[in-house]
Length: 321
Length: 233
Image 1 (cartoon, rainbow over the protein chains, first blue to last red):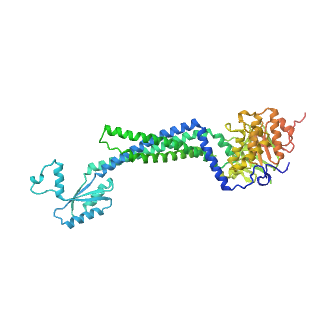
Image 2 (cartoon, rainbow over the protein chains, first blue to last red):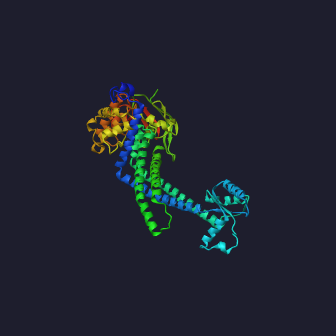
Image 3 (cartoon, one colour):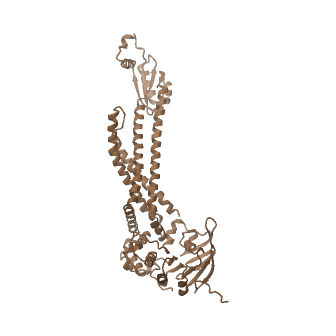
């Protein structure tokens, strides 16, 4: 009953059986395990053909929507940035300042935090602009002397700083009045902020939706291999060993979906831009050259991340036990 | 030190059903133990405690030197490498050959690939299934499938083989073959714990018999029979 066993103590008992002449290092064993598991994942991807197609297409759908949100967001941001770049605070200077005093006021305005540029507009220039705005009337003839003051045009870094910059300008020596079209500008800035926020929120929501969608898709994959997981756990596979093939499979599914989404968007966006500009030539849309590359990069990043995350989440409940 | 030891083990399932009640049991290395008793007596639960598929509600479970009742999840795989488990429904992967099924178990515990062919062959030869190594499970008879699953359980050379109703799905002749195989494996030094309803097998083999009823050990005999002989009136 206590006979020396073939199947008892591994190191001594099995000399010859199942043991190569050369010793195998731990590193070699680990590398071969990783290679094996990666292959298992790739094989799984192909073997579960229909399942993979289903998973890839639902991730693809989510990624296409996500890409749409991203493109819209970027365009809205560009429009908002363009609108905001035109916003300016005008500071009227007291009449009869010496050039040194004018220069002092300009310097003081530049030192206000959040100010991007300050340009001095002499009253002659202001009059010329007014004439131009009124349609080429020779105002210099009509008025005996130029009624307009010298002004500083101050552009802030960010539109939401307009009000603060305007307040700060009021206390600059030599400035008598400050205006930035208070009501209209405030409303516009509020609007651009809303547009940005909504775009970012939509993008975030669609990103989250892609994670949920791919988690569900990959749950099917895991369910299909429930028995394999059960046996692996039974014979003593570690959690990582069980997890790895699924992560590879999830990554592959996410990547394939991302590549498909990238191809579709690369074709669709330039076409859509061309059509839009044909219909509304003045609509400010970002050119394809500025959009496609970052879009593809985002889709690939989000696709793989979503695939990995989905696989990790869906395999977790099998490992929780 | 006993290879398997249970001390005052209770298992209460959520909902209040008591599967095991103050079970104490000790099995030495090299023993062959039949666990018998009616359905629902707690036999399978007891096995599941041994390979830590379940945790005891109370009491201590020690297997191959591990305190199973307080094993950290990360250590569970290490315990299971000392155990082979065989089931009534074989649990073979249908899309892999017999060879691949056995190799899969070796792979799963990180066996170096160079060792695998010889190990698989040794396991399949032991159960007499080497000739059918390239067959898929559906091409095998029930007995052959059970032998394949025994080969898989043994491939990693465990000290203990746990068998939960291994003959439950098999006809009497085939059942007998499987039990003889398990007996032979036991003679090579592997400790075997097997639950069964098969009265004939237990009565002929006359090994240690532990009987459970309603979660309690009611009998533990060294050369036991399936049932206590009835007193002749």
